[in-house]
Every structure is written in C-alpha cells, then in structure tokens.
View 1 (spheres, rainbow, N blue to C red):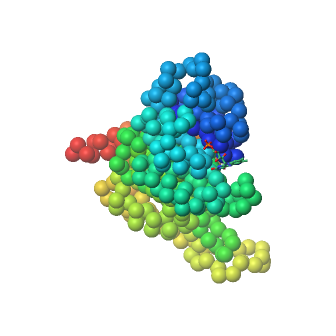
View 2: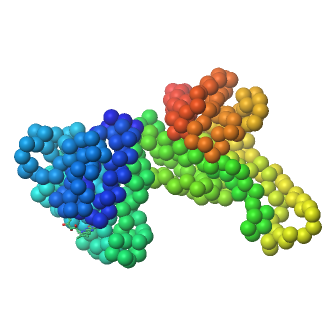
View 3: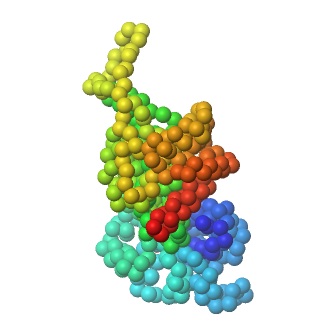
Length: 395
Ligand SMILES: Cc1cc2nc3c(=O)[nH]c(=O)nc-3n(C[C@H](O)[C@H](O)[C@H](O)COP(=O)(O)O)c2cc1C
C-alpha cells in the first residue's frame, strides 16, 4: 500500500512538530518515498537534518534556495506526490491555504498539486475553536481537503481540550485510506466482527476467551485500504480503534448478533472474525457472587448462532479456530452454516501477530497459506472475497 509511493510531508511551526519525525520514520520503514517540506517556523522546532536522516531524502525549506536539487521544486514535488500530508498543521497554514496564499514552498506545492491533501491540525484549544480557524477549516473541507484530528487532551499550553495532533496511527491510517480509495473494494460495504465476547456472570465477572481481535482489525484495515466502506463490530480488545470506518462496540454474543443483524442487510460481505461465546450464564447475578463453600456451579445456555441464522445476498466468511482435525471441522462448519468461505486456524494463533490459515471455499478447494503477518493474511482473504463479489456481479 505505502511501498514505492511518494508522499509529501508538510511540517509547520507547531510544538507538535517533533511527533512528525515518527510519522516520517514509519512511512519510510513501510517503503514510502517521503519528501519533507518544512516551513521556516517548523525549522525552529525540529532541524531539517533530522528529517533528512530519517527519510534519506533531501528536505525542502526555502522557496528561493540556491543549489536546489530539483527543477522548479514545488512543481516537480507536486507532480510526483500521491498524497500531501500536513502534520502538524498550524492555524497559520490553514488560514493561508484557505486564502490561497502562496508565499512559502509548502503552500506553493499544495496549490501546484492535484494530489489529495490531508491536514492534521495542532494548536491551542482557543486557537482551534476560534471561528476564524473553524471557517478556514470548513472552506478547506469544502475543497476536498481531508482532516484528521485534532485529538483532545493535555495541550502544550497546560490547558486541556481539543488541539492535540492526531495520533500517528490515525494519521498513517488516513494516508492508507486515501491512497486505497479506488481499490478493488471501492463502493463495497464490508462488515467485520472482531475480538472476544464477554458474557457476564455477575456485575464484575464474565466468561470470555483469549481472542486479541488482531485478525479482525487487520481485516477491517485491509478492507478500508482497498476502498471499502467498513463497519467494524468489535468486542472489547486492547487494540487502538482504526480510523476511517464505522465502529460498533459490543460486549456479549447477543449484542454481536443484534449488531450483525441490523448492519448486514446493506452489506456486500460479512466477515466473522470475532470469537463469539457459544455459551453464556443462564442468569446473571445482580450482586457480586460471594466466596462461599468449596464449589460453585454455573448453568450455561447456548448463545445465538450468528452465522447459522443470519443469511442473505451478501458473501459470508466464517472463521474456525480448532485444536484438532482443523480442515475436517472447518469443512463441516462451512457446509452446516452455508458459508462462502471458511478460514481455519489453529488456536495457537490467538493473540499472535502472525497467523497460519487454511481457506476453504464451497467447492471444498483448500488453500493452505504459510505463516504470515495477520495483515497479509487479511489481504489474501480479501482477494478471495473480491473474486466472489466479481463472480456474483457477473451472474
Ligand atoms: C513555542 C511555540 C509553539 C507554537 N505552537 C503552535 C501550535 O501548536 N499551533 C499553531 O497553530 N501555532 C503554534 N505556534 C505559532 C506558530 O509557530 C506561528 O503562527 C508561525 O507563524 C507558524 O508558521 P507556519 O505556519 O509557517 O509554520 C507556536 C509558537 C511558539 C513560539
């Protein structure tokens, strides 16, 4: 997704400029060519040398620099860029862009480019909420600038409020979403479930499982980065919620069932990566259960069978986590629940960053993948979803 892509990273004079070093580093590590343009004020906060060392590429600071390595730099940079990201974006740059002012290299490049522009504002809460700044942002959004953040929290001024630079993960997520906008899932709506459900026993205890949610989140992010509209139905996890998608928080199997039932009628595909409890306590104690006696018996009842009961025109992909007879058990589940695909994995992948899966389709075609990062597994699963959607659209 980011590999080989030219990204212009505009850095302006905010105290948050140091955080952009990490953004530049992560983009470079992912294989992007990162061309940094710094305003004069930005160089007061971080040196161009830092970005040059991180990206391995020249950093542009001056509009009238002598000995320039580029020919009419702002034009050549603007043409090469697949996306321009201004992070942090000061109130000043936002005002200048809204007014079409071109008195520095960053403004000139934005004006000379046809690439999408992402701005990540960072400033004091009063500066951000000032109607002048808000009007300028509204103008830019009307001109298809994409904004990410700001986040809320402690500001450099010591105040609390809106104005913090969005987290690196959100800025990079937005870049990926923008770059993948016209991907092979454009105009498709994919619903993904993730995480391990929690079934309450009493007000503080629950039955859950060791699902980390990583596979489901990787699927949701991969679908987003291929242009899909994504709804992520997530049981509790410790993962950061991805940007660029609708998030529906659920806790129990029943809540997951209801969310899926409400959301899938408009979807093109449902991918059930959540580890949904098969059983829940028959009754939930109103008060905390006291430690009395040597034994405690909990009576459990079956939860709703989501994949078995929610059917429709959409592609249905299930997961089978097994500790034995992986392929046979997965095949049985695929046919029982009339799924389009089933992804079988050994339970040892729970919580891990990599996964070794076997994908089985309705014709019992078996595709055993090697051990891969979950994001790569997600893309391989989505390749098959895309093929099924294409096949279906031809019928
Ligand atoms: C210590 C310090 C921190 C600043 N932080 C911010 C900031 O977070 N956001 C902002 O909009 N301006 C901030 N400013 C003001 C900008 O640096 C100033 O408006 C400058 O002209 C911006 O220039 P530029 O947009 O060309 O980078 C700060 C100024 C100082 C001295």
